[in-house]
Length: 605
Image 1 (tube, rainbow, N blue to C red):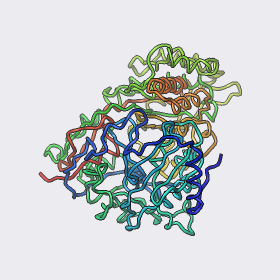
Image 2 (image 1 turned 30 degrees about the horizontal axis):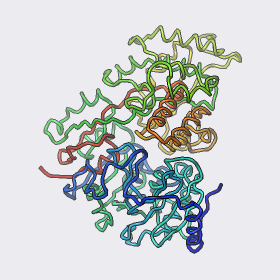
Image 3 (image 1 turned 90 degrees about the vertical axis):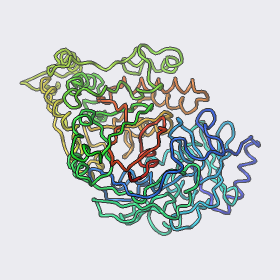
Image 4 (image 1 turned 30 degrees about the vertical axis):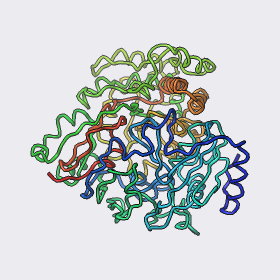
């Protein structure tokens, strides 16, 4: 059923009708909601456990990004936006704790009412919630935001709108959302939608906004100035309405956050060494160990900090576009994984210091277990035994090379699979039955750094099979446009996954993304089994059932051979100015946008 937008007057009537239609289902007004169990923090909590409520305010922090930007509206598909901006300037009805798998506490909303079956959620706005211009956040703004983002916004926001049966005003400061599917996560997902100001967009197109059209937000930071494509300066709102909220106490401490944009990672690193940047995240363990011995570091002006975490590895590597031949053949994909000599590449690029990703949820309790599927995981996969790829039920392990540049054994296995798929070497090149050579491009951003080195080593291995590949480097705008249209053979891939995967999995792996531009399903996977596992995750009422569904999904994704995995990031590595401090207590999710810079502060020696 298509979601319904109720104007203010009709909403009051519809709210009463909706209440009566529930059969007076019991609901409790609470300060927080968890996906499973109860929130860890009590109603009277003072601050997040990993924040310092007494952190001083002031100072400036400067980050670097590669590429550029041509938009400051992070809620539409048009344009390239600084990826951090939507986290710093905008707020939702509730906010997340980084110390729990998936628990939310009141932000713009002071409380939420939900029934046991979570078929609806009613939020009560805080009376003092304000936009940057000082105007109050109203129920009308909330309803408009849900509808506009659900119909004109980025694809990441549209899935929820299609599962909303009705959104109604039930009081001066309360709004109720009714869901039309058996999905226990929807109440939490709804609570995380950004709230924007309706009046700003009267008579104007939200989806076609230009660079100066910065959406009005409620968050602690506002755009102060920008130089198109080169820099953005954000200032902390001195009149920020939520500064004393428990969820905000001790957070957002810098007076200014600045983003500088560079052509590639090498130039950005040199800028950091020269003191132009305050902090830099390092993803290469060898560089971390060997290339931070520059003068500022030796003087103690730069500090190296490691932040451990317990979240899933996610997937990093090279994704194959199965919308195109020959990547639609799993045997070809397995052959390309076999030819990817990870042990040799890892030793060359990172000094062998980083272990390989073994599955999408590795490094966490959500990861698939080794060997054949058993118990509930086996039961979930059994109906799809004839359609899932080899290794899903039996167990799948990534191939291991011999550590040498030749990698002969794995290349022989790869050639056997390619021959089985109809590819043979003719005149030194691998060709199909029609005589077409096996060639493909790897789409990459300019300044890809280590990934370019990886492709160069990989290309030499594929030459031994008669396959030719070429790295195709494009600027940020071209990369974003081509990725959105799935205009690539293979490209770099990074998908972060949380300790509480849910509705976002449809955006990542759902069949709607096969043809819909801009989805996150870059590989173009079409798997009824994966869809069923996502359904099972979202309808699970126990942690045990949820865990089985995630582990089953992990098997389907990993055995699908859609991505050539590379190294795992087990620890966050941040090099930063010595004046930047953070609390001793670390969240279980480790580093991330909600940790650095959110709970850090500036303090002179």
